[in-house]
Length: 158
Ligand code: 4NP
Image 1: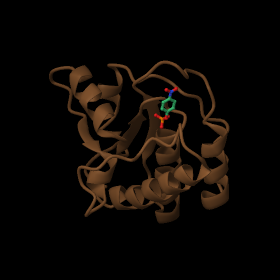
Image 2: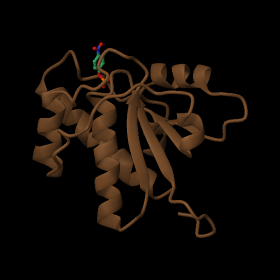
Image 3: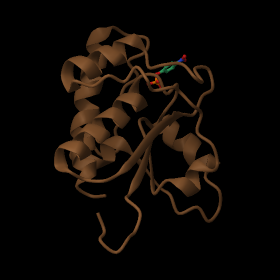
Image 4: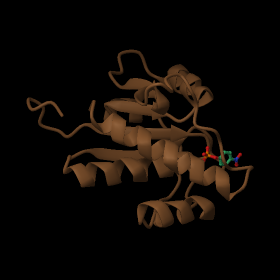
């Protein structure tokens, strides 16, 4: 964190539905920050609107609890909006399609830095976190491991 800034760094994690990958990424970053004693603001949103106000997918809730000891059942999906580009320092997309959508939405003059989550986890720069929604539980476990590793790595550069 930069010491000359008043506000803690803020990060918005963005996927498609905001019920699988981005809530897990949000939870993983919050956990990493707590463990390191780092003050940050973290939230998540989806580019799509199908799941607004829905809690995370039960399989996402299960991996957060099993592997992170975290109850994420209180999170509710929301859709990313133009104000987010002023409110957050970093908007971090879970996959390349989300990143393209965000670049289209970003208002001129917005200072939010857009990136892919795995850009922060060498050597996986440029890669997407696969969408586990249509798969089985194993995909959620892979997702949790990826977002956890990337969140720890991202924390070091905020
Ligand atoms: P997420 O997964 O983007 O990781 O939250 C998805 C959840 C729901 C849908 C697609 C992806 N859906 O099409 O409903």
